[in-house]
Image 1 (cartoon, rainbow, N blue to C red):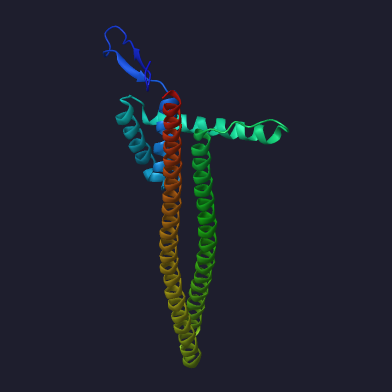
Image 2 (cartoon, rainbow, N blue to C red):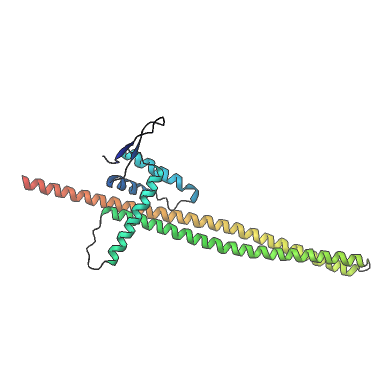
Length: 248
């Protein structure tokens, strides 16, 4: 079979016509990993991950004339990464053994670094969000306590009013206290809203910085791969020239 090894799957009697299914090989693995490195799906928000993998799959199928599914490309990438991690651990634990390093290993290592970096950033973001959420919940609890105190004072004020209409000055004092609580509650609500707005702005800035850093890292890796390709091409040309001179 060719680059994408296409296998014909016969249809059952009375069902849809036979369909083709592509099978992975070394060439298709390299093409898939190159696309994953070009557009890493790990730094994407949850709702957009499927779209990124679909785009990767489409480019692979177009370049190799294959018929891979999005699920197959995603699972294949995960399998290659797990195999690479297992082999890497085995090489690290084995003493005195020589390690064979390939160009595909370089790509897998870079994808692994991108995946782990994205995972760490998401965990840090969740921890930061949880801390801010706890602070907002604490502020909300304070507002609830203030509201409960205000209701309690209103009830007490109603009982006192029913006991007698001659306590005008204590009533005024209670009214003053209630107004003061209302003002404090309004201030707390305003502070809480300001914190929410500041938190949202901080999250947007953090996300923008993360995307910028990821873009820089991706560009750097692509430049390194291009340099390696140019060096390999130059070496092959020198080798071809040397062979040609030898046969002259």
